[in-house]
Length: 385
Image (tube, rainbow, N blue to C red; front, side, top):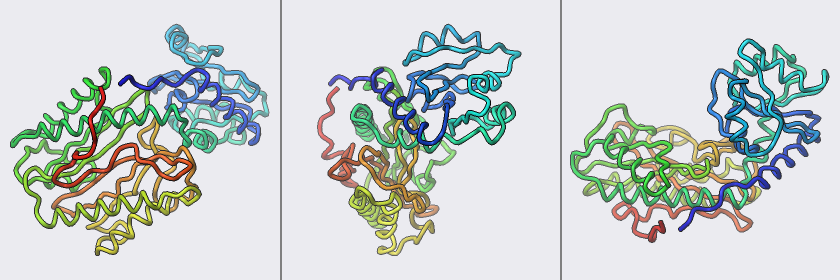
């Protein structure tokens, strides 16, 4: 099965137009995008963040200007996705003064909320506090609602990762090290995703599964161990992020009970995701299941130590989040993880993580939730290469 089409120039131009509409409404004359996922989202330019400012100025009047070190000009010119003028600065020059000089003396600049603090401070010295604003609300309002093209890319990325999970499960043998499974998962992602490996990978066995992001030891797998694997890859920059938890061998009654509660909590969170309801209501629904079973409450353990879910897209963790205090209404196009992990301290942890996106008819899974504890991939279907 061929991969979905990459994001087109027309879609990026539409995103820029939508951003300019929000800028006009907020009295913002320009937005500075740093070397972040938002730069890629709007312009197609992919750049690794460093101590040197490289980004783009989106002007409300329709201009798009790239800013980069002079010695990087040729490279930037060859990889921009949306055409625009390229402004450069030499090593002895102040790039923040260059940005300031592209605006009128009273114009307000909204700054990418993911740039480094030292860059913001440089802009502050060049322009003053009164002329700077936070671009996060403007950018987040657009990025949180995914287009059909973005949904298609994430659907494929997640299908690839589910198949990698299945192959990892089948590969497990007594004594295998967590690091060896991590390497295997990266290889399989490369095989199925055109050479792109894992964007991250957590492989935990036994007691290490009680640590949400894994332990520091390279543990060997033993019979009866709980196995927790959390991994993902990217497709045209869009992320997958899926966790499966099962047992290598026969599961004991306590593990079975907690696994079933986790499964119920994940299902309750999904059922609670209704258009117009606040994001926090999904977290509330998952925690209510745990309380009914005598776990928690709140973040107390045994129970769920973190939020039920996070937004996902070009960044693996995006706003809004499925967490208490996030009152953002659920809208069509929003994409979330659903992972109300249950931790039994010093013993084991169970995390089932799948993602869903909001449609006009309510939530829709990207991937089928885990089939069962004993047969984790019994209903995933055949993967189409």
